[in-house]
Image (cartoon, rainbow, N blue to C red; front, side, top):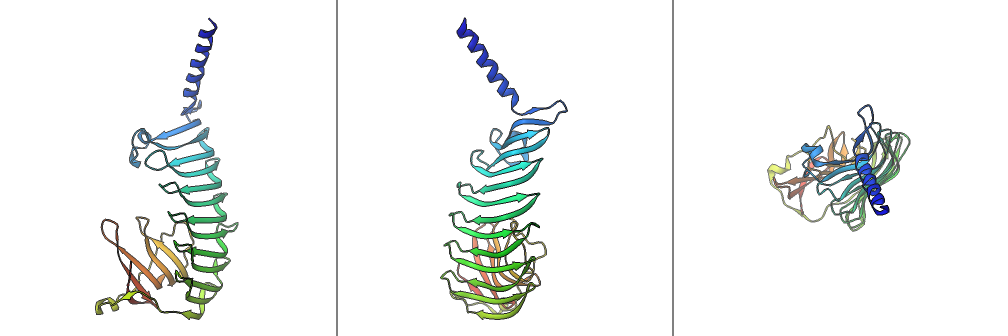
Length: 278
């Protein structure tokens, strides 16, 4: 009799836990622990049973820790905290291979504190501090995949100030400018690029791209200064120094229809310079 009693209690407890998941309050709002699957959001391309995200609701609003998953429904894509349905506190984004893609902090819906981005191989690609207004402040660094510094500059009230440097992968200085109020006030050093190929006369008349709505993955875009701009496929498109929103000294990455990098065009002082090796 006692065994049957405990068996009934266990079944009731299991049933209660099942009912508690994906439940709603008396007003029809999501409440308690929720697991969202592909069948709940068919337009996202997940398998029906694959987990899209999971976490806790409080009367229709996200709270606490939430996990979002890649298309496999198992590998975490984002781990972050919510307060009253808004991102708040530390968060981490991940690549499909499980390595960290980005880590930072949101406070009152603004990026604050240290933001660090990574390459798929685990090396840091970008690091900066964000102030109370959600803007980069102080020293900002971009890195090559081998860990060497690619660019280094300082910001004051959202504008480039002081010495800006861009490096080659071997650590030598490629460009060096003195910046004042977001503009180049003095060219300190410009070195010629290596590993370039000949180009046709048609290429020599080509102008570098101008961007109006740059995709920078949350990093501030400087019309006068160094930027990395991405295309709609999340691939690097422009990399270098800009003037008035136009690439001035840097690279344009060109891809085939299947997404393979087929060419890199190098521009110097607003003019086509050469074809780089990829």
